[in-house]
Length: 366
Length: 106
Image (cartoon, rainbow over all chains, first blue to last red; front, side, top):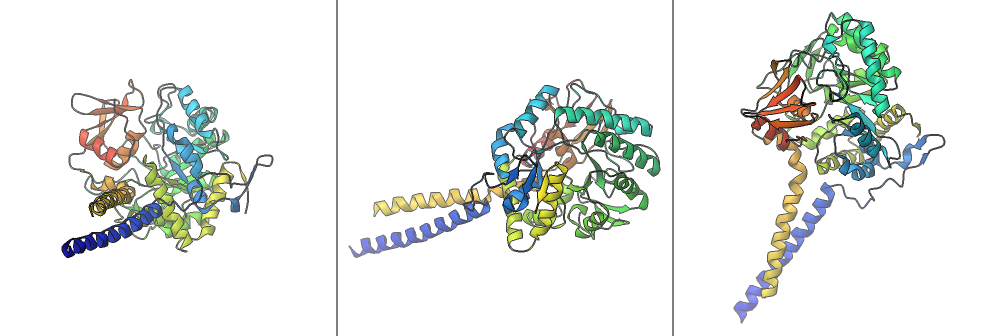
């Protein structure tokens, strides 16, 4: 009898321990997914349609962070993405113009603020190849031709409902794909890029000079993913000319830069110094290259720290094309926590969101 | 006593499930633990083939219309008739999938 009672007491003690562990795990599960009891909808957002004005303070911190993200998802996730208030969707190839337009309409339908709809239309590996051909940038010989290609692409993009083209590549050479950059001297490349950008932007499309600070398509070692590159004055020239020509966006790469642009031994995209210096001379959108590329992710042993550094470095738009929505939500929660704990200033998040909303044509009241 | 033992078994299962679930957001790092040995990716431009870094390859392959199995590898393209396309082997394709890239294989 006493043996039975002793066994029972052991089982009860074990049960208490197990219950405590379950409670702790439930807490951590909720915390890791950022489930803070806050309703995942956009009812709180104060937007006046008549004046096209959004009150920034009406957004939750999580919504502000989500607005800074462009992702790559299927329409089946549309509602969850809209509830998060995700900033934009990137699109890959489809079979027809109509398929693109239907998909874009579907993503925009029900969005309080239009999503950015982005694409990599660089001519080489053209996502519209099933219905429209464009020359690759290395096939463009004159500035007049560059303007016409930019204009024609911009016109089609606008008609289809796109808002951003992640082009042109203004690296001085493309030694990898061998078709993605303009050919010629730094001056000629800068000029063609400027005219191409003018053509796109005349149609209301956000053009993106990439990949700052240059040399991104010039160096690679199959055994090393974190790449170091010496940056010369010439590498920066096309970006400086793009800025003079009022390009709307610049995409920052993952290379570790030194020389005329110095990322202080970190990937450029997480360098507060490099991006800070770019910000001092550029008022448009600063966009990251896709953040799961090994050039960035191999630099970090802790992915959460990578997320924090990306937002801390004052990038405006983060490209995270992970098809796992839980990972995307996890990133947003990690950054939200870093802001709450004071590691990232909320004011800098607000600045980026204001730039994004302005680029979408929305007036912002802070 | 039997009831307590059964409850404990359920609690142990719950701990297991919750632990696995807690690790799920870490799957983003899957790409860095996936096997990169023998991953091959080429961009073919009008018959000329160029070796492409694997991470840039995954980003590009995700944006293709689809990837079709050939006798040896996979051909990924925006249009089946295109002269520009990617050729990736099974290791590369697997690496991209594990890394959370949307690869459309037909």
